[in-house]
Amino acid sequence: MLKNIPKILSPELLKVLCEMGHSDRIVISDGNFPAESMGKDAIVIRADGHGVPELLDAILTLFPLDSYVEHPVSLMEVMPGDQVETPIWDEYKRIVSAHDERGEKAIGTIERFAFYEEAKKAYAIIATGESALYANILLQKGVVTD
Image (cartoon, rainbow, N blue to C red; front, side, top):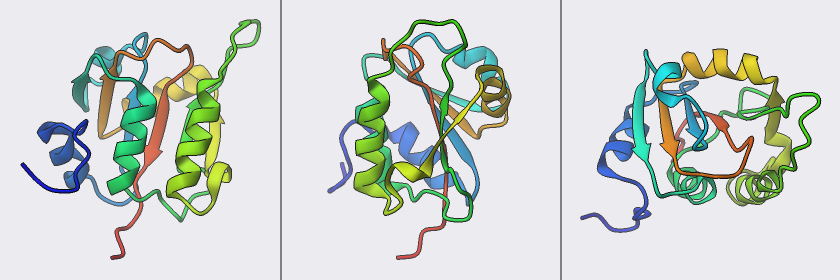
């Protein structure tokens, strides 16, 4: 065991976060996301039983967001015509704001199919049991300075 590591972060996930370098990306996916098919060239980590917000908060405790891009955090846009509310995005804004001085300005959106293409290039995908729709989030790692 280690001190000061959020307990929700498994040894496998900690290893992946440590291995990632500047500009590498990780997806935290909701329960509907096709993690295995999108992650054929990535490391897929199962986190069934956990939601995206608690994993996002724990990861951002250890993981700096890229300061060289405008939006190191990307959300999957709601498809035109879908009558879906995304209250979970407000949680994401609060969590990102607690960990990054840019606050919600660090968050952008990507069209659904473009998000899938970016996910295919991610270093890792965390498959959660999150039930909220459009709850997928893509993080781009920054530089550790301390």
